[in-house]
Picture 1 (cartoon, rainbow, N blue to C red):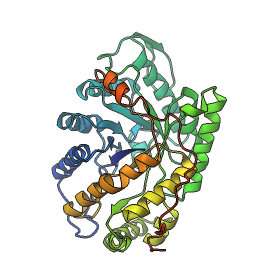
Picture 2: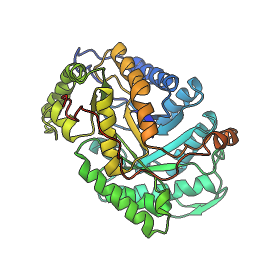
Picture 3: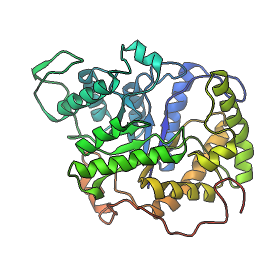
Picture 4: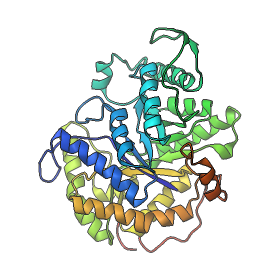
Length: 384
């Protein structure tokens, strides 16, 4: 299994102290965390795209370009690029430039995006958002692959023998399709033979698993080899400590503050308590063995080879946040890498031969079931 750390760059008061860092400090926190993620051995770092409060992630290419300059190995992800809001020509230019600046370490996760305020900002409606996403991706895909493009669509001016510069470093680039609740994204991914990344954050596992099942069915329908389907999945929060009791005690006030914020905003949380979220949701809070068991359980249903955890401190102190990430890479990731073999990420141009040599024995089909005996710690955070 491979692991990404992802941030949407939420910007607001600390849930426990009430302190709000400046925008400049918040951006620096993100870059520093990306550098730390590379040092600790994460496979990728992702920056989301949102155009409404409380997020300040409106410009992922700029953020990722700075991160590219501070790192050398880690893959750089968008999470997600909201193509339904963007001119695909301009998006292509930004990301082709970033592809060069990163040395070919870029991967895209695309999606229509969420949020009514950003939809109004870009004059996107619920009736046309999926058509915009599909059309933008189809043009973006052609621009990345073809030196000259003639094209006509509904949502931007037509192109006639158009050239776009610079030409990208990776030809082609791998594009994932972010999926939360609708079949449109997984249908588009399956049609083009692209991987899918399940949000897997808000609800219990079943609706996400149903979408992954649908993706695999449509993948086969379009004539792709079932063994080539590739799935990633998210998680709703992360904090690891040596014991489940310590992890829950530390994270409970953070979770309770989040629930209170939802309710003040008129949103009733799906999970009524931290224990409920640990039992039924994708949140990863507990001891290393607990978290290993939880991920293995999710893998049995989703068959995912890649997963993300939150890159944000989210109310933790800097020391707590770093210690949790170190514990993840020291005690959790090695077990999951051994239990769930995964295909290598695309090698950056110039390192492909080395990558091929070191990954020749990699397993190329996802596990559909895990038979390793479970530990004596349950997924609820209570010793069995």
